[in-house]
Length: 97
Image 1 (cartoon, helix red, strand yellow):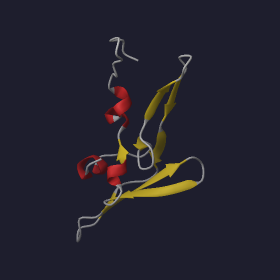
Image 2 (cartoon, helix red, strand yellow; image 1 turned 180 degrees about the vertical axis):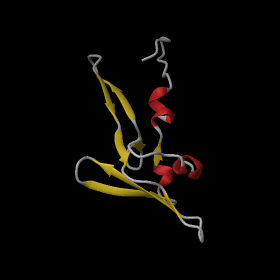
Image 3 (cartoon, one colour; image 1 turned 180 degrees about the horizontal axis):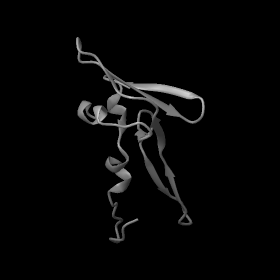
């Protein structure tokens, strides 16, 4: 995410995390589709400072885990509409899956 995108997020909005593993769609040998996405929710308002260009967004994962997005780790997140899973992937035979 860019700083402009981070400053526009709202409370309760979902974000995808790709720090350790990208969003994946796995098609098994028998055709079962498994989607792996790590989803965080924004749990507070965006905080900015007048004296420096820093920002901070509190986020939540699950029931008890709380983290924050700041200028050093905002590259590891993306919006659900920007997810690479939304782009059609074409197989060799031309059928999208």
